[in-house]
Length: 199
Image (cartoon, one colour):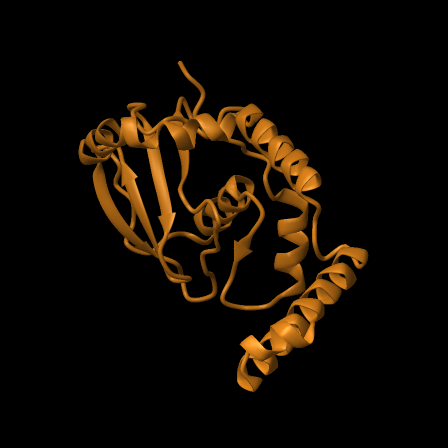
């Protein structure tokens, strides 16, 4: 800084400019260090990564189900309102799991159970585990489910819950057997692939 300019600036202003310069240099050094460690991403890399994410998202069958939720909420509600609603309890030695995709469905017809049917199917059952002890079930009017579920029902519903899960399953206890079960079965039912397919 020249002597002429210094005359126009007071001591506090000069000190403030020096502090700002020091801070800018510190931030630039920090950004460069973070960039070298891979903690900052260059703009063109961020753009490429974002474009790739959007492309993969739009290719996902689940994307169209999520995108259509707003349009289909009324028909989903109407389908649920036609069903009978139940709260079923797990027996003393059993509990329900839940997941990042907690709603699962199955159709019981001709003695077989078909997972992943749409809510509107006449024989569709809709399950939502609410707590480790309780599950909500929307079922056909003819459903005569018990207040306390048989152990086999809890096991079957937990299998369905894990298979419907995207990446996370939640339990109120930490058990190796649950982890192994989840690792083996997670994500086997996928929206638009083998669940909620158009008729």
